[in-house]
Length: 257
Image (cartoon, rainbow, N blue to C red):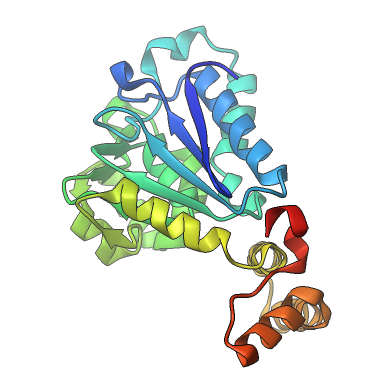
């Protein structure tokens, strides 16, 4: 892993920070590779209960690094960015983000991939690709799934920049806080105390049910619900609730409880 991604750990929370503050954390090809590798590695680690994504410096992410566009292998960068901008639906570990400053273009696409979003009151967002004669092809789908196609289309056509309050109104931002990193960390720690098996089952259900017809999605829901209810974590959670104590999830293993 290069120095473009800074990784640290607090309990079962893995913090991953974009670390190009001098470039407003613009997404170079190498940063995209390192970010995908860091998130996927954290997702594979059973000891990680939540991933906290943030950006070092004054801005979360200004989008694609335009200085290297003409020097890249197009097929290779398309491949790695496709993985990056669909990663929220591929992983089964909660991904929480803290946004300060700008989250533009691909930066907004990263935010759209996160499951819970905290933003500073002065944070700004936008799909600004149209301003340079480009279209947000790779991030359109994930943002359309969260914001709706008409809203995402309007943002793509106008390239306008908007604030955190409007982001919350449209469903991009979940909470606005003067200390988004602290709030995101608190939320990640809470998520990391939940049943790992149930969290993974829930995120898997969301992925598998997406795009399915009503009946097919219901069949997936019933099958996965039966599996969770029959599992040891639900049995422990039920017992802990009745006994008024904190659950000790069997799926964590003794060394992580």
